[in-house]
Amino acid sequence: MLNLWYKNAVIYCVDVDAFLDGDGDGVGDFRGLTDRLDHIEALGANAIWLLPFYPTPDRDNGYDIMDYYGVDPRLGTLGDFVEFTHAARDRGLKVLVDLVVNHSSIDHPWFQASRAGHPKYRDWYVWKKDKPADADEGVIFPGVQESTWTYDRRRQEYYFHRFYKHQADLNIANPAVREEIERIMGFWLALGVSGFRIDAVPFIIEDLVGSGDGTSPYDYLSEMRQFLSWRRAEAIMLAEANVPMHKASDYFGDGDRLNLIFNFPLNQRLFLALARGDGAPVRDFLNELPDIPETAQWATFLRNHDEIDLGRLSEEERQEVFAAFGPEKSMQIYDRGIRRRLAPMLGGDERRIAMAMSLMLSLPGTPVIWYGDEIGMGDNLDLPERQAVRTPMQWSAGHNGGFSTAAAKDCVRTPIADGPFAPTHINANDQRTNPTSTLWTTQRLIRARRGAPEIGWGTCRVIDTGETSVVAMLAEWRGGKVLTLHNLADRPAVVECPEEAGGGTLRPLLASEIDLDDSGDVPRIRLGAYGFDWLRLEPAG
Image (cartoon, rainbow, N blue to C red; front, top):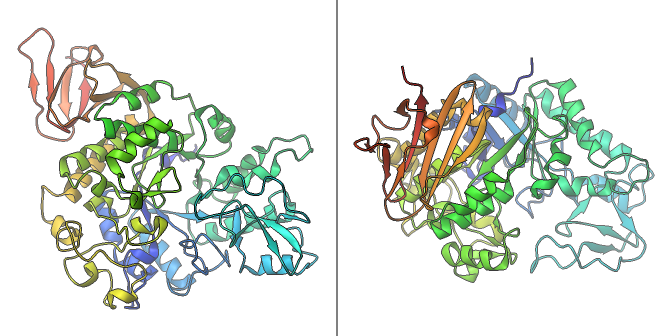
């Protein structure tokens, strides 16, 4: 029987260097992370996704890798990593690691050998004698990245880099490169990981387009999945693939390719809905969500380590979201995104933060939570590009928020020092004993999500309540029904109990009772401003 643990999982994403400094050098490390596993376990998550922790020049938050088989010395050793995975397993936490094989750092020995013409590595990267005419098109980071091709004086050729020029694209069309990727996967599987978040999947397979061998480039995803299944049956592939819905079947296959795909288009519609205080963008999108294989799953999220990418919205819609959540140019990035954390975007309003978290957790798919959002952490817009949302975790009201004993200037990224989101106001220790805090609310929501397998396993039906500010969803699985209601507006809303309730009992999953008026012919549920309810529908009798 297949182990589909991810269908009802909650994944917690951690940047190791920003979580907890265990040795006082200003950089978070595996010893610090291991010491804080109790926090993740108590939160209710059952899987941890680690951002890259490999040796790196660190020009792109570790995504410029120079050794796929090691741990950055600042973060610890392979021994520390293994101790961490054992400690995580003892707490029932699975570990996912980032697989970044679209590109490597130009400091990687493979690239240095390739530019020197080494016979083994000569074709491990994508080279051309002449600069292509379209070299300045298709850049991923407008305003920061000028081209996708850069001239190398030693080799006297141009190398391709879909991202920054310090990240040369590996030549996935080369069988030797694909064999090496399998070795990398096998290595980390042997050290106890339960799968991979795969970076930039559409760009991994773009080298295989038009290969002329009669195969589809997407077949490579099947090869990766087959290898994964043979090495560790429970292991999964979670893909960063910001693709339109009509392309989803290419990536999921018949359930034999990717296990999960981040639902970026839904995330964009979600922020448009939050900006408008109107659930229509989410409802309309969910009604058009394509069917996917039973073993496949979407991954849902509010924020991640990158910008909020609004590139699939119309220009008018994008400006609406900018106006609501990133009105200043310093809050925007790459002409398409917002580089702020969730809590500041929602004005620090705990009701609205809780509603947004609840809505994300109730959407069809597997929720992924960015570290710090469970306590409503803020951002530091003084930091460059996407670093603004990667500030150190705030554990206490003390020095550096309890992240490190080092001087603030020596920390990996400058901690937030003042303002409403400083550690004196926002920290895990204070919230841990406050039943009205964002942390307690998030824990309660995650418990409800884990206790409602209908959402992870079942079908999702959008319910028309007649109230445009409300997103109502009915999840059904094996005879169970869970109704979730979310009011995106800053005013109360009243909705009629849907016919799908079937005249049975409404049992609240988040509180001891619901605001229900059953004096009329049809029961009516009242939601406060930014209010929400989760209800289990139990048949009469």
